[in-house]
Amino acid sequence: MSKIKKRWTATLGLTLAASMVLSACGSKDASDTNGAGTPDKPVELIWYTIGTPQKDVDRVMTEVSKYTAQKIGVTVKMNMIDWGDYPQKMQVMTASGTPMDIMFTSSWAFDYVQNARKGAFKSIDDLLQKNGQGIVKALDPAFLNGSKVDGHNYGVPANKELPAQDVWRFNKNLLDKYNLKIDNVKSIESLEPLLKTIKEKEPNVYGLAVDKTFMPYVPYDYVIEKMPMAVKIDNPDYKVVNILDTPEMKQALQAMNKYYKAGYIPTEAATLSSLNDVQVTGKWFADKATNQPFADNLWSASYGYPVVSTQASPALIYNWSVMGSMQAISANSKYPEKAMEFLNLLNTDPVLRNMVDSGIEGVHYKKLDNDKMENLPDSKNYDMPTFSLGNVLLTYKDKKDPENKWEEFKKFNDTGVPAPLLGFNFDPSKVTAEIAAVQNVKEEFWATLMTGTVDPDKFIPQANEKFKAAGLDKIIAEAQSQIDAWKAANKK
Image (cartoon, rainbow, N blue to C red; front, side, top):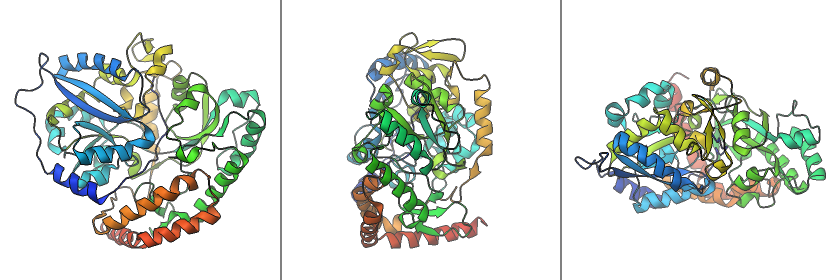
């Protein structure tokens, strides 16, 4: 079945140079070559997406291309870039004009709003009407309405869970081996006795598996995803603060540093791009992930051993969850109409969607009935992040999933509570230089602080001094001004 990954944190990579190049590139009006793209003479679409590169990607795309050539006259070349490397590499390649047609974008990796404004993506308003009506019909209207940038759509959101809810995940084999209970685990501090036991009993296992993209949950809504400006979830005045100055973040980072010193966290956490290797081998005990209905079944099927989870945050609908997984069409695509035809097929055709998701039937997975499957041993060579690839509700269910799985997804979406800044998109045009400077400071301090690698009592003041020098206060003031105007206009 689906191979859900948990990465919802990454860097934005905002630079003036990239902005200038992208704006220039985006001004070109790419259009399909007349008559291009037939079953006999298909055109090739170049697709860049996020995730640990898989051994069998080219093999699967060969089969995908046979199918799409007959259906819509296109073949597909997929290029995967690892989680931690994706934002920066995509910024560089897009700015330099690397040929591409479709690219993964989101609120947390290769930032959707900022790159849409810089001209990296083609506006798809007309394309949705002409070539994407299946997408429009399939999606909850909140996805397309919530992902508009300055009144226009620039990406196709994946049809998936709307709210974001953090969970602590656990390797159930280790829970059972040492009779450990997770009923009362919610806060980061409540993990401590379990981590202590695992450290004593299993010294070669990652107690709390985190990589450089990790961030602890705190009850704040970020103005720009994973940048240090945020509004408290339950604060009615919408005051923008530096997240490092909040008591909640300080407490969480102190716990992380305590765990790091105790040996519960990988020593190399601040530089780890991916945890794929330890997930494959099962040499981890706990980590943090983003939830959806029956996610435990998906993770267990993907890893080949049981995974269970417990709630770590409420289910809230953020901008970044609405925009948490999207496919955009490059402003420089040679074949924008064919790219939209492909995205429409990907989001409406179960055969294509499951091939892209799970690989080749009989090689990577076994079909059990009309909509259920199980992984075969070779699935390890094609273990894809389901959420990043389109309409999740078309994917085959795991054999352990209930028949009403997708109905439960819709119920989960209905229960999500809007976060305070849902619908607000910060315009950085007046503080572009300051954002670039703050981003550079963030690169210096963020991963080491968030993973507990350094003492927050010592390094938060150092980071804040550099943030202040870089212009963070000016960005916060600009954000506050925009939020106050948005709040008044929307009668918040």
